[in-house]
Structure formats: C-alpha cells, structure tokens
Length: 414
Image (cartoon, rainbow, N blue to C red):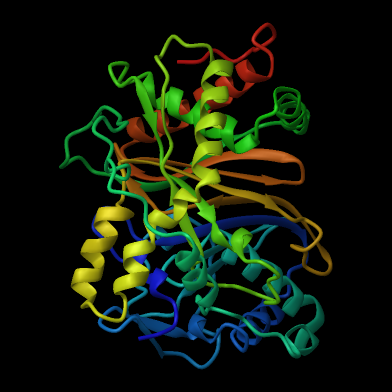
C-alpha cells in the first residue's frame, strides 16, 4: 500500500457521487494549447500519480499514459456531461477540456482520491508555473504525500471517551424530492457570485462581529436548507478542514495529496432565529471543536487500522467516521490570482466545485477569486431540480446580505 491512507476516504458512496474536484477557468488572450499540454506533462514529473490509474485493492497507483496528449482535449462546445463521468480506476487522475474562443474556457477535473481542495489549488499554481517557466518550474521541486506528521499528532491527541455519533446526526438536513427517481436527469454546473463590494462588506462584518467567513457560510447555508425541513432545529454540517494547518514547521514545498479531515459542528438554531445569532452559535461551536482538535476523530480509526485491515474493512471504518451526507458543504477558500496566471492571457473567472450530486443531494462549494465570493454547485438533475439548486444558492446569498446588515439586505431569503 502507499503512504497515504486518506485516499480511501473518497472511495465510498461511488454510486451516489464520484470523487472529483472541478475547476472552470475563463480567460482572454491567446492560450497556447501545445504549450499547455507540455506544462501538464511537466507537472507530472512532480506529481507522477497524474498519469496513473488508482488501484483500490491495495491503495496504489499504476501508470497508464506517458504524457498529457490524451488528457487535454480541445472541444467545440463544453458541456458538464463531458467531465461528469471520469474513471479514476482505469484512466489518469486528471482530465482537461478546452473550448477556444474570444473567451477561452478550460475545465480541469481532478481525482479527489489523489488530492483534496487545498492540494488541487497547489496543483493549479504548479501547472501555471510550468506553463510560464517551463522546466525551471520543476527543478528541485518535490511533492510530499507521507503522513508521519499526522501519526505524531494522533499520538499526542488520544481518542476521547466514547460519546455520541457526531458523524451521523439523528436529524440530518435534507431537501424535498422534486422528481421521480426514474426522471431524466442531466449534469449541470451553476451557482451565484457576490460582487466585490458585497464580498468586502462581508469581510468587514465578520471582523466587526469577531467571527470567520467560514462561520457565516456554514450558518447561512444551514439555515437555507433548514427552511425546507423546519422541524430540524439543529444545524449539523460536516465541515472539511485542511490538516496542513496543523503541521508544525512544515518544510514541504508541495503537499498535493489528501490532507483533509472534518469537523462536525451541530448547533441548536430554530428557523426563526436571526441569522447573526446563528452565526455566533456556529462560531462558538467551531471554537470548541477546534480547541480539542475534533477533526482528528474523523480519521483516527482509519490511520490506526490501515496496515492491519482489508480495504473493505477500511471502507467500513470510513463509512462510520466520514460518510457521505445528503447535504454537503465545502469551502475552497481564496484562489490566489497572483499565482494562478498564464502568460499572454488574463484569467477573468474561476469556479471551483466538488462532485456531481444526484438531486435531491446538494453540495454548496464556496471559493473566492479576485475579491469575489462564489457559491457554486454541481448537480445531476432535471431542469426543475437544477433551478431549485440555483434558488438555494441565491437564498444563501440573501442570508449573507442579511448577516452583513439586516436593515439594508435586498435579497429575499426563502
């Protein structure tokens, strides 16, 4: 087996959602496609797993291509259907589609078995550097996937006494089913983007109220979903967290790998409660979980049993501690526009999302690029279900406005 047991986290529930990270980039100027292919090939010198298929039987990688020729495809028209069905068990761990035009659109779809959101951003910056500087970008650059630091951290943080099952809330958030299970569904990518002015106002409001942007996003998303199940008075959301932040004196240049665990906050928040009160509760709840490093509980058993159990048993451990919830949340954070750039082009728009979920499953994916917050989602659904997904994202944006200033909020929340 390889040196990262956390790959297995994203091998369960494959029929419900396939483990991908999707990034849609729009740019103006002339993108050199051949140069871009060479950049992808060059990046694999640092991340050789890109050219491999994933072997679940022993959590290993086997090369299936020698270069990026078949991984980068130019198309006349991009549709979500193109990238909604990769096969990481037989194909390379990255697929890129390019639609040239006055505005060129790139869609990168990477395996979530290979890396997490933070690792994917590191890859974007590496790929950009390879495009801009060529071979010099990979000279003496090493990617670290080992988890010795996590093993050491777990030793200093013993398991808590047996408590309630926080990964399987008794009353989980959910959405109504709008169409029959047999209805025809298609893949869609959508969302809403807050203006730069509103995003800046959000930052100021979080500082004034001594909370984090993540607190606001989780609370507003939770309240938005709760509106369709008002009898659920506790907002329980799984919050992925980047464990790289817990590595003391980290000397690694790159960690393009799975280094994510999850917090499991659950706060009492009746639907009628003002959003600012819910945000303060979320902040307090997260502070308590952070104080005792609760995120370690989501990976503790997997790390302990990795060398002793079969893959099937390890997947059962994941199901118990890191299962796929019907309602998902992720925050990719800031995408650095100073590091994500391609010579002779201007990147105008970036949309990062997670896996395609079959309605009524729903995940909101938050990210910020050039000072604008985006609330995106991928869905396989009917036209009605996808429109409902857009309405949910708009309603969440309305609640964010309500948090910023209840007196001036212009968006009506549902």
